[in-house]
Image (cartoon, rainbow, N blue to C red; front, top):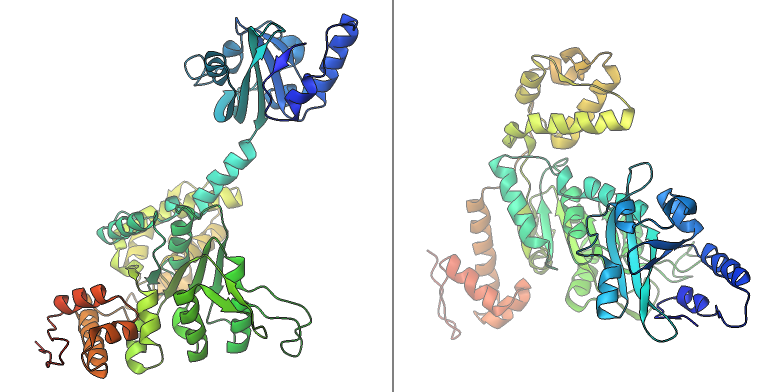
Length: 477
């Protein structure tokens, strides 16, 4: 009886074939019936790399019929990049044990690229001598294309720009992708805050886990509380069943809280507890639920100003802004508009089945002169509007929205974020206030600020704040 080193039921099924006491023709039919019942492609090779068996799944995956492949060398058939030197069957034969889950590209009968996941094992005779190899493979092209589409949709390829401002964004995002650091993304509406958040998730170790997003300004306080934390059946009128909140849904992955500046003081307290203890309770429940998540937040408001106003907790602010990331408005990176225009032309050509080649004279001049209060989102909408109106191969000024073409260029702009100097000044005053409230006990002040003592010492040194634990008055340089 031929022996196989099994990994799945396939090899176990083949081991039932006993050449002794069976008619050879009946044995061949049984062998082929077993192969054809398997959903994965199966082929066996002799020691000269010639194919000696081929099942129906292999025909379906590759397009080659059994009659076309038997007796042929597999290297000439598949034309794969790892044939010979990196061949899984060759490695299995060399070391005498199976090779599992090797990804490879081959060319099918129609000369199309097919992505396969391959398992390979040596094949022995009754005396324990290797007589060839057995390979199973399945088509993972759909999963590969889906991953590629996700990367196109949520990856860096959709974050367009070569300006100095965007280069800084790329560098910052690049330094964050392999961490679990809590990030606060700040930028005006339409600058792509959620796109950055998705890129941070997609390129992190949590990319196989959920990415859950919620707009905190879109829901009333009571509804937002149940959406974030969930509720138990009967917790309030209308709670007819248990409800799982966003924190539970995002467990293991990333939770993105957009418009974080709009949450109420009550929600802020609960959110602070989750960030500190990584556990919470559903509304109407007294059981603690532990979660392992990365939190990314975003706002189009000046969150420092909200802290000074007293509408946003300073300890929560420091928890959320472990790493602040500022996105520049489009008006501050006008040099990126040609790249963005080309990006949207490619995107809408694909979506609408069009073949628009580019833009006519003066269109770029008009686009670069406009102030774009709605930022990249407004530009995308303008390009989509132009596609709908365009009747030829080029986009003309008449295809653009009237407010962009006809209104004066000096459109009121949204208030931009404070300069870094102003932010530093506010941070310095906040630290001084908490130090004074804690009677200059730095451990207590650090807890009130939601940071470690080492971080507090570093920020004090940065802002020129001095003072000892004995309560000596700090210098206000």
